View 1: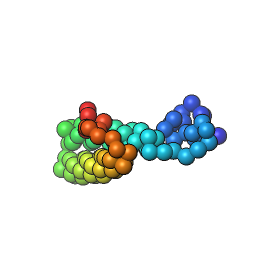
View 2: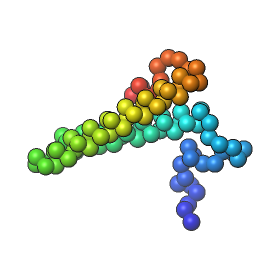
View 3: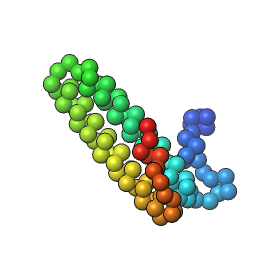
View 4: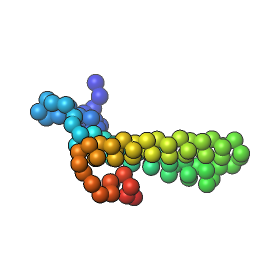
Length: 95
């Protein structure tokens, strides 16, 4: 059995036993975007310090994939915000 102290609160069952709504979805997407950015930083660091062409090519590809993931998540985030009638710059744009 997994230690509950390591559980991600974003994916915990809602206290009322209900389903995760749009606000919860926004929080999950925000966390996912942050994860993508963290992965990009790691791959940039690898790219900055790679020793050979193959390693550099791998880091470049991984970085491009994470950037694409971030764009897809940011697009979904914007769609949910629009559906909720929320306006202004989303947190997915901030650093």
